[in-house]
Length: 350
Image (cartoon, rainbow, N blue to C red):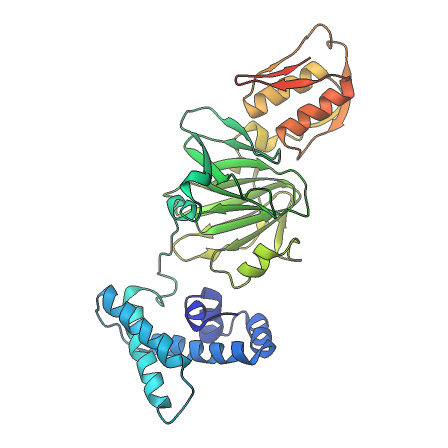
């Protein structure tokens, strides 16, 4: 259930109160539970007061104190002091307006990578970084793979990953190929954006100091919401993608970080992806195994060692489009009746 405080911070709720947007969702929510309806009524009064009250310069400590009064007063049963409650709310709203909480469209609500990983105990957090100029291929515990480009980093909880769901924290630019597992959804937390998939391939561009975050889908379906989206709890708990709220192959979406506004979903342009693995289809029709392996080396910037003479005349038909790197290698090995071994500096097929 949404608290009053959660509602007055919620951009979708503010849009509904002030501009009657997203009305189907909020009207349905209001009708679902009398307790929710009461919180919505109180929060709506505060939002309206904020919109109508001039800015008053105050210190953050003063605003925090007044907010505590709002929580206390709006929790009391309505009595003859009802007008006083709304007066308190109006004064509090004025303070909060000054601090930018209700200055919708101008508020910068950025969340850094460090903010995100603070949710995980440092002793339980594994991080991989790419500080060099060349792409780095990373394999996650569930065999999902990520290609990290220069300046990027990704991490996850050692104890929590792949239990009920798969969650990673990300900054920079990376190409994700997620192993299919509908029972354990895969989530990427990148600044203010949450990306959810069940198994597919996509690119995230989320440099720490950029003005926007981009998600570009190569294959499958990808659901994207902001951290302040009213559906966040449902999205995080559900094992499904919400119908009609996802991107599909060759589509993209942007988040303007300062305003927390998602762009419309549009078709992505070929020029928006610069790296081989983001563009290659990995569809092979009677292709020489030597050619297939060469393509994988180029796309993932990995070294693959094998007996070229032994498999020089071998050809293969395979569709490997959104499979993670090691799943691609395993499928090739099964087709040619070989095995592979992962070493620190290369993959060996034997």
